[in-house]
Length: 264
Image 1: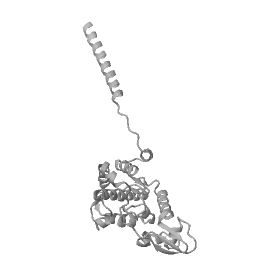
Image 2 (image 1 turned 90 degrees about the horizontal axis):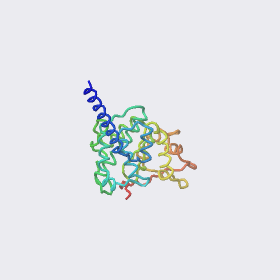
Image 3 (image 1 turned 45 degrees about the horizontal axis):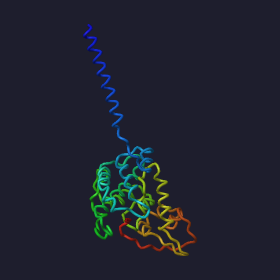
């Protein structure tokens, strides 16, 4: 009995020492997490994020401004990140509310557009370099192979019928509205689309000079979208919802630049 008691005591002592050592080791070697960017921190706090959304927000934080995209730096430093984002979008499914789905498809379009741009980079103009870049079936969204043209016209425009999307999707050209600097979500989509539309029309997309209203060619190419969403069935009626227009000006159209929307 005495020997058994001694053995039991030694066993308990050894077990206690091992537990203490393991705990101390864990505390010493526990990694310190890096501080995420402000938009990523906000996004991951307020929304249940999937990895592609977090990675995409990091790309937007690091390489986009209202003046353009730093494609050279992105290709040099984060090519794998945008590849991971598009690979995950290829398998992800649009789900949730109508706004959730629309936000997903706009994000998908913009992420794939960035991927195509850095694949071709350096380049002065994607369209002038590859006339079928928007029409070739070489992207994948939600398990479906398609083209950027199909995603824009057959899904985003046709299924959701919201003219404001033209100020949210970015075709990697100077003529396009700027690439938005945050991942779109269904929760704030309506507010974001209003902001993007208002900002573009007030700064660049609709410039009034007396009786002339010089507007982006988006209003010519997609006229039916804007007249559908206009209170009086006119393009000017649509614009007046977001910008003050004096009198009844006549429309003229701006030259559209297909040069790459790059900043160094």
